Length: 152
Length: 278
Image (tube, rainbow over all chains, first blue to last red; front, side, top):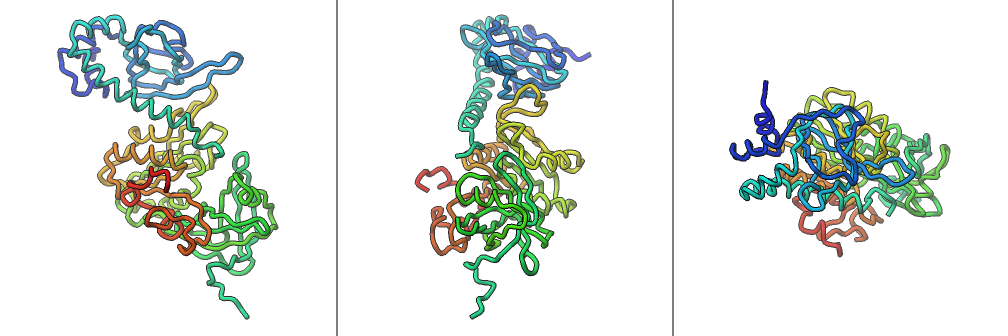
């Protein structure tokens, strides 16, 4: 049976990751399974983990009182759910719901933050991987805000 | 004195044969000439449609280029002329000049993968290219169609997209900018689909149409994926009047969109695409 370290090593997020760093991350990781409709986390919850999707699809949602949740992004195989674990106050700013059966690797945030503090090379490698994702999502958000398909 | 039918300034009378509501404020019109057959057109070309007494607007051809019985145009009500056109009922007469402009370079796509990226109503000028590719499917490699829309209720040609999605020789992905929990598809902007699509960036022709900001984002994503600027083609929209490169209304740097476009390669226009004065 494939171990979590091997699974992480094949995930696109960890492409080129040093083996010793992979072992450190694997020590904070566990396999998780979410049924369709199940929430990975809800807005306001402690951001105590992030997730690498192996299979399935996850919708990121915001809720307005009295209205159904609005999904502003969906993420699938090979993608990362969650960056709020990186920055204080470590609270989720949105909810994440499995749209279909989803298998993911959950990474314990406190565990990994501690290892990043202890080994700044590991921390730098993690930041180098998260920053492009954050920039890409910022760009996508800009395009969404412009509402380019509306009447102009 | 008889006027030559070839006069590009003389609208020809066409009758609205059919009108189909696509979305709120958006209809598809099928127009048949009062005499003879429709002229041939190339995917990506446009006609000037004249709503009598209101004005004329450039509207892309959105039907099957193999059909000569009617011209098909999808029109969204955004102003006086497009509103008058969108309001035409079957039996009404409309003036037509065209087809005009340079279309999608489909010959350059033969033997290669084709990546179609459409945003909103941008699928309309791309649909003839998709029809042409499907008519000669064996001439192309992988064909990927990526469509972005504002919401699930505003997806253009939804049934047709569903049919295309059933085909094993097409990869069709649809995304919306936002959705409620009833939507089980993808949510996000259409450029974000590009890294997830299956194509060979070294041998792909990309055809892009949509709002210009969306096209700029898509072009950047296509370049990041490894497609060269000369293999990325965008369909531009400018204020076209004469449609034959004489009046200058649609000047775009050194080019006229009506005559040198509307389809242009990114390689040709990259320097001026984001210049606000142009």
